[in-house]
Image 1 (cartoon, rainbow, N blue to C red):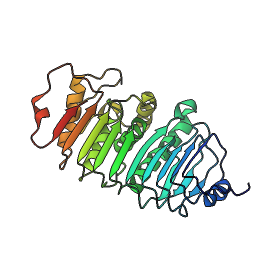
Image 2: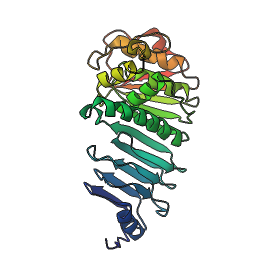
Image 3: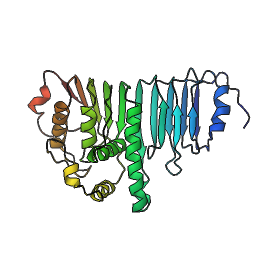
Image 4: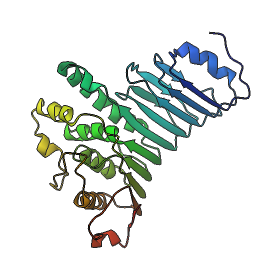
Length: 288
């Protein structure tokens, strides 16, 4: 590939490309003013080195779910990362300047045989927790529903979580049993958390039976594993969320945070009167 010379380019979006490391090595040096890079549906990229892109501040990677390739990412200058890919197949080598990150995963596990799926679950659990470790210094963090489901699987299997420095946490998920252990552990490992936003979005696409079967094959009882530590049992279906579950969520948050100032619940409906503890003197709770 001939090196490019896009000396005035500040934003670059590549879609549906087969990108090799050599391709990016020919593109990036020709974009000295590049501030934002988006790769959507691009496969074959095993290594992305952005260390020489001194002005780059925003990186968004959304992988094609049918052709996952593990990629190492070196991006010491970016401030914002959005990473949504199959099986969380990227490893973040250097993100020392990161202030904000948004993470979620696509899922292809339901389309492969059980014995392969089992091996991939182990791999994905390890990679998701490792990604969290790499981003432990980020102050503003958004976690999608599928990411939370895998974190819940990690918690159920006893995988240790890193301590986080996040101050502003957003959870984009429907509230049901398969995200609760992950949410609880993230809260417990975020001692500096000031603001929590929950957006009730049903982006969770990992089949619940896959998660249950994975635990069963390891001799674990799903009905016990998906409870919160105080013994509360949560709704199995994302379609059966009611006011009681949202009240339980707020209770769980208040029990597992110490420095929290603000909770915002978006797209969460309450048919019943607002519980008295919602008017907490120390924590502002807002419904939107």
